[in-house]
Amino acid sequence: MSASETARTKESRLTGENATEEIRDLPPSAKLVAKVLEYNDTLTQSQIAEESLLPDRTVRYALNRLDDEGIVSSRFSFSDARKRLYTLDLD
Image (cartoon, rainbow, N blue to C red; front, side, top):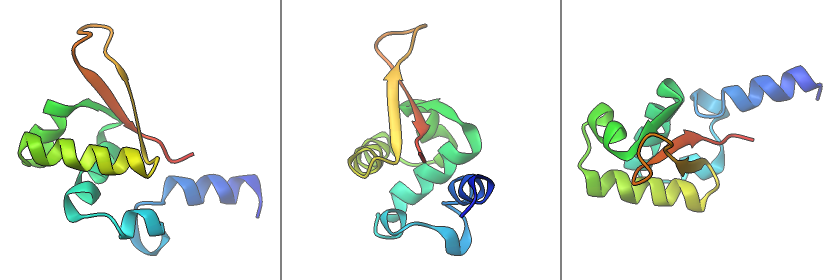
């Protein structure tokens, strides 16, 4: 597989038949949170809850499941150190 094919596969991991086993085995809330992050790049937990229309507790659970699978990464927000920013980590 060439480098460009690998890059395309990683870019489309969450769509259609290219979804990985890790995503398929996750609960629907985690899949929705992953899709929201795919479209919005970097969001806080409250922004994810607002975009997905899921309760905060459900978003927290979904982010924990995604983090356990290594699908999402987080870092502290520089503008507000109490918040974390979440991004999809497909590498």
